[in-house]
Image (cartoon, rainbow, N blue to C red; front, side, top):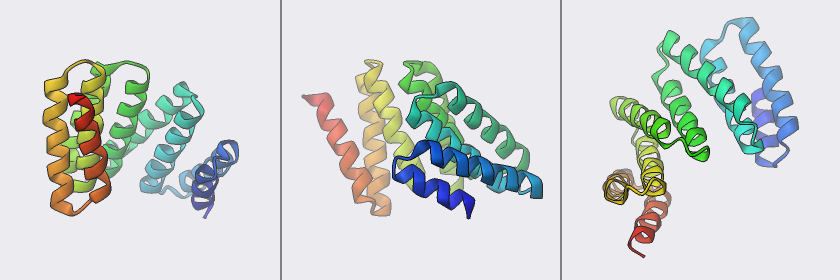
Length: 170
């Protein structure tokens, strides 16, 4: 699929080619009215633009994915879009918006029983609290992230946020 090729090019660091294939995929899914796939492609495009430092394009892609996800009831797509948007806000130093977006994403992930994304977004929220100098809040959400990762056996996420938790105490 075109989207799959875009993902492959993104993984190879060939972002312009990835954008080309994702845009082609976007046109196809829009033409056939596949709104769920449109949300996925927009989220993917948003992350490619983010990786290129094209924050305005990233913002537009993620905002559009969230709007469509809400319209069609795609809660998972909405949560992913909110988490991606939060990463963008955090990278720009807009911690208030990042925190708000992560909290929304965490709530939706929890409602869906999506503990993997909940754990990741909790950890990312901890990163934002840490950057914002709110260490006690960072510690709390890192611990929540670690507990959730343990619950589902996600050693990678558990290890990442154990390391981040340790950094606060250094």
